[in-house]
Image (tube, rainbow, N blue to C red; front, side):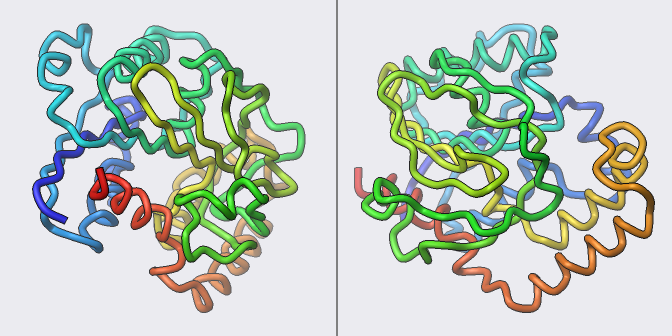
Length: 265
């Protein structure tokens, strides 16, 4: 793959990323860049954070040079209205006018769905804390290039409390599990062909464990996902068992398939 220009959009607040770095945890943009480099180093990758920019005047004149855009995760909840979230939705709408191919991951999918007229809510069936089990590709997904060579049922790194409630007009649902009906989708908005994932093929299970440890007080006291630290340790042990059987190439196939999609243009 030669001469592909990619824009990675960082979804987290800068304050959150600064805390990540202080604790030795890669930002979501850094995780994306590292995973993409597994397939090729012939990528020109720029990172943009709409949370930190009061206007898009610098990026928009250059945005058509990008062959694709990847929008990553965040600790934000899209229904908690604030200026940083409004900026991200506004920037996604600008991307729909200018970028042909978008890979929207977790928070990125939620922003894309919202910007395209769909909706997101807190999940009724619980959360994914580091791992999503038994994601199953449906008939639409089996025939979609996103899932070329992917097992029909698989586990993946994931960390989310929210889910897509209503799809944008014309969206195609591709995969589900018991926690989130919409684990992946495809829709078109403006000039953009959007592939969306609720889970994180670009993030390692080791990073997910680091995030769980980093957020343990929040997960126990605020999110009420665990009763105590003992339950967290049991959950981490479960993820460590998945690490032993997980194959990196299989885990990240969606990234490879999207890069091939860019290359084919």
